Amino acid sequence: MKGKVYIGTSGWSYKHWREIFYPVELKPVEYLRYYCGYFTVSEINTSFYHLPRPGTVAEWMKTVPRGFRFCPKMSRFVTHIKKLNEPEVSLPRFFDVFDAYQRKLGPVLIQLPPNLAFHAEKVTAFYKALQQYKGYRFALEPRHTSWFEEESLALMRKYKIAFVIGESGKRWPTAAEVTAKHIYIRFHGQLGYDSAYSKRKLQTWANKIKQWQEAGHDVWVFFNNDGNGNALHNALALADMTQ
Image (cartoon, rainbow, N blue to C red; front, side, top):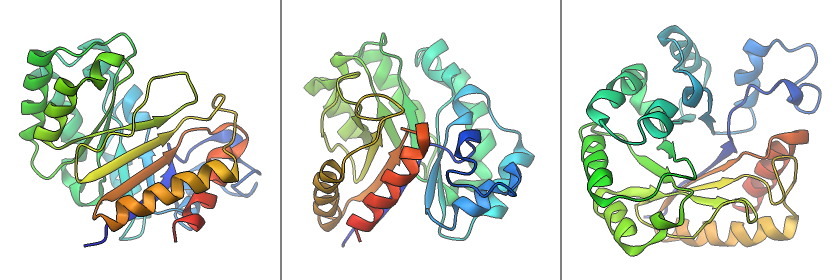
């Protein structure tokens, strides 16, 4: 069966998108509703820095149309402070925020710090802890080359964790590895967060995405190059190319 393609940006509440994308007269609380007129998905970037209040999450869920999806970013307490240790302690608080809205979620993004190396025993325990949260999907974005080795990739395949394909020029290592039914791609800007992708580059990615879609994969794509509204323009262009 043909997969689905979801294309959006790494959040919607950017003040510098006012006038570039959001009309001047629009209040920030109205940004999400406006964003939904153009996109079918967004990452929740704020959950990395601090967990949103239940009332805030409930309001987001009420605002978006039925087919819209959110991909929350795992708390940095789990990834950058605990460094995947003691997941039985660090994970419950994160999932308590989102459990009631699981049907509105895409994969949960787990972004790792560049200095966190792969350690099989610790990672296996972490993946096992994730499996307790039934119905969730996960995507892991490592930034240390040890995660690109076969032992690491094999564990991702075993536990159905998507390997995040990160497009960032040469800032972080990357590989187009497919380790799960769902595929997760993040565009961080070819030369930095202020840089845009060329039409030619986007077309190359559109061709890959359509191939994965035809093979039955759901593909989740996010643009994080928010400077100058580039994420918006690139996401809309790629969405047109993948129609």
